[in-house]
Image 1: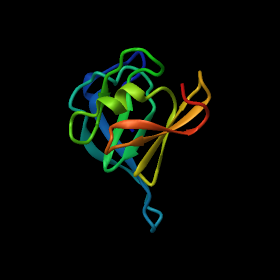
Image 2: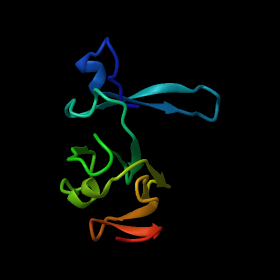
Image 3: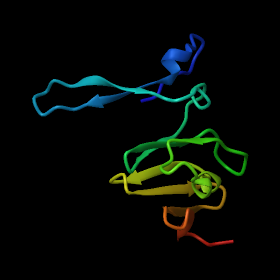
Length: 123
């Protein structure tokens, strides 16, 4: 969980990252994971998905200009540009995104740095 929304905005809190650690012995707790390198995305509620050991998120949905963080290898321009709506990850290996305008479902291909159509019409 990355925090930082509301009237009591605090940059240190906004950059903090924690995860809910579910232990088998019923001693569940929040564990500090470090902090985001900057606060670009921390003033708004954001969809984020785990992918290959990173937390991936963009600051806006749709066709607007975007900023993205957490991407492996630095340049994942195709991932950021093609992120058009709500996203989900399968076993942290595959990211799916729904374009609510066109009704399409796409899957991210890291090798090609692009989104491939899974359900719906291309175009």
